[in-house]
Image (cartoon, rainbow, N blue to C red; front, side, top):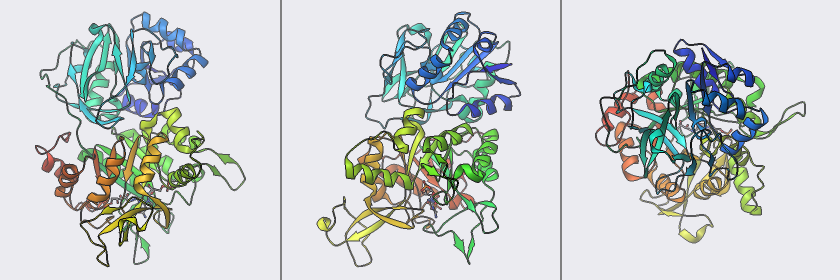
Length: 526
Ligand code: 1PR
């Protein structure tokens, strides 16, 4: 039996789902006694070091954890669960960690985008039970801004390259920790978790010793979800955001089933967008929460969910904070949440006052769950202008002239699913949201959505150059070549499609095999 330490971290559900998928029973520790009595302890952590230590102190878990760890019984710390083993973290100066290992967690200071999000490799430094049935060239899923820096090199289990070579795994006796998320690393991750769970595993060294590890470009599947006129929740797909055909909402399938198909086909991440979220309220009739719970039971790659995340007052006058809404999504299996319309309003307010109030949904959620968990979904459209100085927004010279032959355009933000244009541009929105604590940009394009004519490279390049956080290119993919083009012509870390995957025109596995050898790609695992 596995005992799981739940201090209120985001995605405990996925760790439980993964362990149960492997046929093992999991018990969530309810008190310090259960920690002390544990046979094997798993400590999953997502979010902010400071917030975690506060809660561990409040729950009086620090001492029982230290006692457990000093007993050298099997322990697996994941992400923040690894950081907790160390003395401190730059993320929360002055706050003391468990101090079982000497050293601290440091913020990445590299030219690459931070947070480090995606599938990267590991270089194994010592034999471990964790590596049984693994070759050594597999990729695991990382999502973090800080990495651990142990004083004693003998505890280093694995390292990974991302601008620098950092420690991505530790082992001291039966105490193990991984920076990456085995519960979100597909079949490879499940194999590593199985090795921790099962008895009588011998420490091994994988046969392959990889050279420099590389972050793979991510291929993401997006499921735009809404109720159809009969009230059933379906995956739909717009043409430039118009999801109706002959008056009816296009129905391209069931959200959970499609997500399971894309997991099997090798999607690196799956995104659910509740496209009428601005209209309804996620915690009211909860269809998306059910979709998430069902999906996270069988899909072991990262799940992002967006739509309707904002402060909200229901019809009985009861107030909900965006943080409460996000918490429900995280506890239901989401790894990241995406904020759309509300981000535009927050940025407009910030540009008006110049003040960071700490109250915005972006600031609230990133403070508790970490910036890597907060994605901003931008819905821009091109606005052509005669001259670069004719508007106060950043303008680009375009190789795609406007309807009147205009050679310049800016990218206007919209809210409510593209229904309302705002006096704000996508470049400024991305910059402001990064400064407020967002960890990734999800860059749609209304003009290209559903057109199969390729990604809007000028928009993507302009936004990518404006931020230091990762950017996901959306909208317009019609073939595998469009993915090669966007990765080669802009520095984006990931690209997404919907229509071509839903209509089975271009399977994810085909996009991946086409890109393999041209770019760093995580192979499809059957
Ligand atoms: O504003 O916080 O409630 O969030 C609503 C979310 O729903 C936002 O993320 C917004 O982008 C999304 N959304 C709203 N309306 C639509 C629509 O399509 N009518 N779709 C919509 C999101 C489309 C993409 C699509 C890509 C790839 N954008 O998701 O998947 O364009 O499509 P393709 O490969 O077929 O070209 P809030």
